[in-house]
Length: 204
Image (cartoon, rainbow, N blue to C red; front, side, top):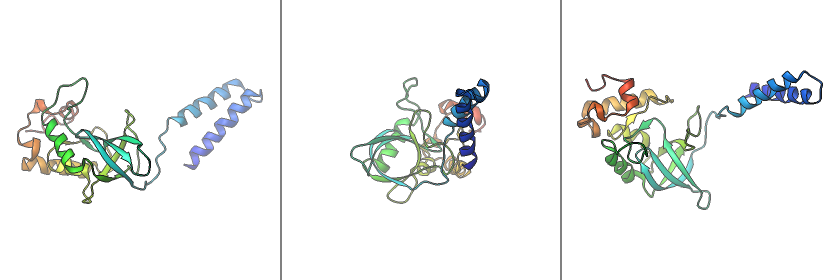
């Protein structure tokens, strides 16, 4: 983080110098470019303390809504890290194979319960839709992300690698070998597009 501080400080100095005629104007432009780039960098502390939240709504198998236990009514939308479940609410897609079952599985596991959120040790805290990217620890101590894959209600989401990618791939292989959940009857055309592209022989 120290090098980012010094880069940021240098950019500010260059910009100020240019604005007061103490440096060529192009140096000020360079300073602004650097500052803009730094604004887009995801600052990711090495670790985060878990947050206690209450699950208030299950959107689908990999997206849930919670209220923060430490505030009055503040809600957050969560996206489970490392797992992709069949779509049920996507505006541009029909309900996918095993989507309702995946949603019901997650509902049974955590709807209305107090859970702990764990963030990635490295990587962004929010996804492209503004949802918090989390691992969800259930009251039992189990990790919801892992249980979804273990029981065959979702896929190991290798499109966006994370620190548990290898472990989640193993859980998927075990679920597939045992024919659990969707793996008991899924067809290739039922798989999400990213998985068909990444693993064209996954069902062979």
